[in-house]
Amino acid sequence: MQPEATTIAVSPAAPDHAALDQVVGVREQTPLQKLFRAQSFWVAVALGALMLVMTIIEPTFGSVENIGNISRNFAPIGIMALGMTVVLITGGIDLSVGSIMALVAIVAGLFLTWHHTWYVAFAMGMLAGLACGVVNGFFVAYLNMPSFVVTLGMMSIARSLAIVLSGNQMLYQFGPDAPIVKAIGQAKWPLREPLGWAPPWMPEFSSHFWALIILALIVGWVFNYTAWARHLFAIGGNEQAARLTGVPVDKIKFQAYVFSAFTASFASILLLGYNGSALNALGTGYELRVIAATVIGGASLMGGYGTAFGAVVGAAFLEVIRNALLMAGVDSNWQGAFVGVFIIVAVLLGMQTSGTSLRALTQHWLPMRRR
Image (tube, rainbow, N blue to C red):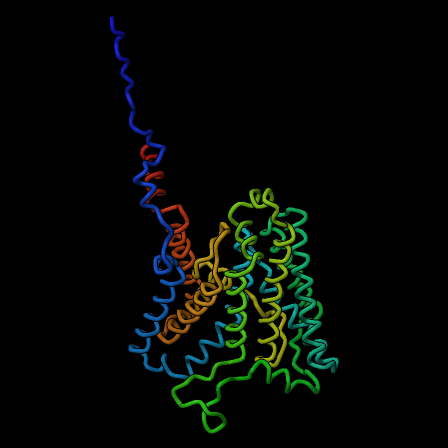
């Protein structure tokens, strides 16, 4: 008697496992696909479209003088946005950048009024700013304190020190090196005829703008080609996993806050020369503008993503919006409202490309409302 054949039923693959044909279709994104998925790319497109529309509506917007002014005005924000991007990639935030600017300007201004050479004054101002970054980095990286709390405290401390050191007065008597200080902050290149070779249609870009371009190229190269940057992104992606793989997390987070203070100090020195005076109110409210520029440019507030190009484009976008509102006759008091709206929209757009889509959030939220 033949034994009955045993039939083994093969159940379909479980829904939580990918079929082979699904896996085969998965491949890395091409550079063009990555470009189209980058928020900074679409911000750049929006920036170009906005400038074109404003030039058609108001021809003076596209004048070489106004383009030069826009490039000078957004450059300090862009410089600080590069430092803020590094901090945001680690999952932190730096609220003290505006106050650090004020302290740096006052310290450098004091040394100039005491008739020290310009490079000594600049060096002392930079050291004061870097000291603030060292304090921020130490408490955040080595004592594991929340970056929001630490930098909020430094924001008050640095501003208070700037007021006390200046005697709540504006400093403007910079001694014998005053012409050099102003020349550094007010320099332009290329110069148009008859002083230079540039044709009439070419804007005269400020030293602020060229400093931003050079620093952005350096930061962009670091982000793309160094192990330090890979460690930086690893920390923002998963700090505990980064520690387990041997990444010097504390050291790199410390360096991130020092670099943020460096960019704020550098921008302050440039503005000191451009203004020809030192004010303890310098940088007031710049924290919001810098954070807005980085977020609009695509940096994630949750950490793990950010680009140098995005920081520059975000800063330029904010300044073009401000300039356009002024030319359109909109009350300047509304600028903060527009900035706030753009921050919210930028975060929502960032959620679309960071694994948390708006559709998923809506589907999760609606059932809860129905209950």
